[in-house]
Length: 197
Length: 255
Image (cartoon, rainbow over all chains, first blue to last red; front, side):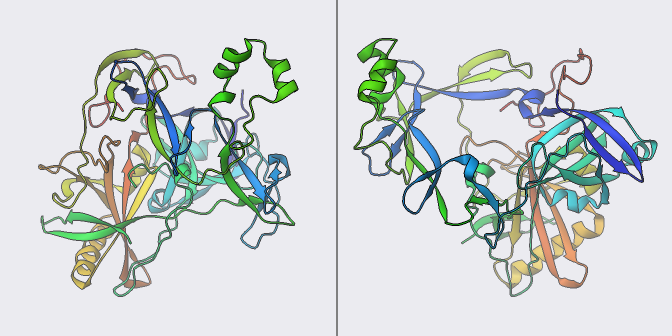
């Protein structure tokens, strides 16, 4: 069992058991199954841009390579900042109390949720309990496993339960009369899974 | 170049504006201290190197064949960088399909058990130039919104000229003052969930606006897209199983 999510508010520490939930666990899911002309299930595959190669599942590898074409083992890779300097590893936050801060609703909306966790309190500080019951929204640092970047978590409660939303802050700019911000096309479309674009 | 979006305001006046994906805080990139690296996809093996092919050629126990002759490696192809691909379908016999396959929908309940199989229906996109997204009249306080829905996708709306600047600034001002978001609807009645591409996932779209506290001429209008409410799954591991019937999605369908 994973270590608990722990937060500290006004000096009081609360601890939560957590379970990741997703849409399919609430509503179910629908799968579109392609069928060939004989009514048999098809296999999805990839065709290389030059049309020369049909690539079935398991035929594509991915990895990091240096300028000489040498494959770099994943274990040798480091997290780098914008200047190319190595970053320190950020340890997991599970089991370690994280300071929470109260945020405004718009701050919780300027946020891309990547996972949702249903929480069950093992130990709930009364101040936090009262604040959550009054609709206060909290933010704290969250890192499931040790890596180079801690994500952000938002803590809320509604009639259904207490939830922890894990993700990354969005960075919207202001629009003004003669200036509309120019956003780059996201380079991590796979990560965004932005099927509409 | 941003995509266009056809939108109405509270009075039902419509305008063509633009929209873009809001960038998020960047993740650190992976690399080496002393030299640059690039991420690549490459050919891992060819059809002759798959497990099924090797079993056909050498039988189930083909380990010795691999160590002796490297039959799974096609030196001409394996390792080649794959710059881009398009999706295709192979028939059950492994042949490339040259026609669009038909689709069947398989419905699974929240418990993961298959409920139904049926011929797939095609859902057209309903976010396009012809019909604007409309204000449904359903507003929700931002504090309530955060506690009821999750948002995995957010679009930002922008003006394209002076007239649409006034149009969007007025919307942002109204929503900011009311501290609420308005539910936008698509389709001829303006009540349907938003579908951005054919057979795409339907989203509930909530439009929220802010005015820069330091400069009332600057605005932000964000369209927050949700496909999930913050609800407790049935029979979740953190509580005893419930006996209530399965819930329907906000748009009364699973996907």
